[in-house]
Length: 219
Image (cartoon, rainbow, N blue to C red):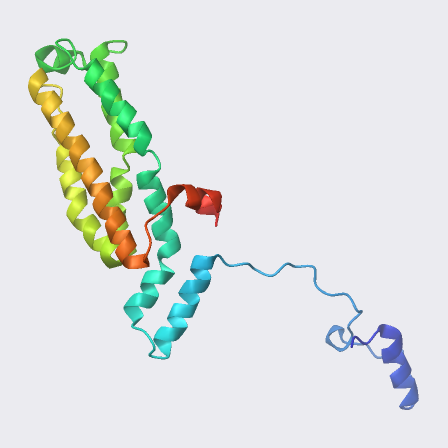
């Protein structure tokens, strides 16, 4: 049990007297007060990663699998960024189609795209927002996740970037609409392949709603 200050002095007296001029080390006395500092709580993914790393050290599993599980928290955050605005992207693509017309694409579109207040400028800004919300930069960075997700990302990101780069307002209206459809098709296909890769790595599909319910990036 804990030894109080009074008990410490009593023991010294029983052993030949107490010397009050002798300093008592803090390490020798416990005042019966436990530390109020809460223990650090790890997420389920971090605990699973720790376990896998220990198993890898013991030779029970390969180091590759241990690293894969250890990276899951970071992978989940990137998956959430890539999938979280899927519905918004659909709406923005529909709006881009609505904005596309004789004064927003083709020769007029290329000349008016930087003119504030013009529909051509609205279309240009919508296309920029689509790129941001589609998480193209996040998808590019997901190769660091390793595993099947990382491998699929390396193959999918260049396709997505190429389809987006083709969305120039200087082309004909027909060509613009065709390329917009091409980007949408590639975007959906890339997310489908990323989801399949995630399931192969972790045994279950990524669930955005579950991830956010558990605290999202704060877990």
